[in-house]
Length: 486
Image (tube, rainbow, N blue to C red):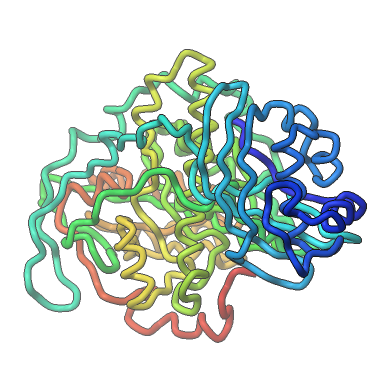
């Protein structure tokens, strides 16, 4: 579906409109409107679209084409914008409602948008406008949750100490659980050589200017069910019965505003070749920077994706809307990538396989492993289980030797462990260490599962704080990284 796109204005058009008075167009007059007023640019752009004066609309917009405009059957000009979401020097973002009908596909929409107007030499509309939520046709029903998103709820939480085991949920499927999903499905959308990747994809690029753009829409179209009380707070590991010796390998895919991090194909290829289940905690901006890789991870029946913040923000320092954006924008970007994967699946006749791909991530890992009461409550309030770890691989250290890394993980890991690695170009030695780690843990009788499967298999152990290995050991993060987004 094609959304209406943004705004831009040539000074002459705005001057003509303001000289005559916007009231002549059926709109309220703006006493302060001038050729340089962002509000006048906004109004003129949509008035041109409503009148099907597409040449004038395109002249006021960057990235808005004649075809975009000609595809609009009808549009109701929005009211004078007075809800400013963001205001910086030479850049203003308005929230407004747009009601319009498209020709192809034929559908009517009524959606809230964030529309940005920016002054370069003149005020112009930034393209595309951002839908506050997924803009569905007005006749569309909300998307249902897939069975995978209806995680079985464990019994109510029991009283106890700050760190305690939660009552067990129903048992998971037979091991390894991920094999219950189809194995010949969506990965076939890509040639084998594309799935294998290319050398150098793990490299990290530093940007001259931070990329602060939000996702194409700001909230996901579906909401997760309320999180059961037993899975609230910070989950560090899972206590399991003796006959379920399980462990979860997790890989963080972090990316900040001022860099584009990598994709470690050697890690993913090894896991895929060996059919090892794993959970990837991906940043929202990382998913946007790596759309094909994100969709390939989604499509793999042995993998799942969790939320790792939009730009790796420190949610112990960030608060209010900045903190919430780190969470919700990432959920939204996942939904965008899932929609794109769904379009590919539809075209290939594999639409039925999409039922195995959750509409939303159901878990979140706090960037830097830092949180506070407010951010924990925000994450849990959005239905997300906050996943920490009990085994730190140490692969973020650039000089760590693969043998040292492997031996440390093998020594610490036990049934119910959640192990943290990186797969974004900052997993130093991880690809080389993985075969030894997997072999040794299997020799211990451990089976690999995703984090979601691990949660369902036993009693989660939680704390009401976030730390690396012991309470208070990551307090230095706040002074060193601050908000942490760049």
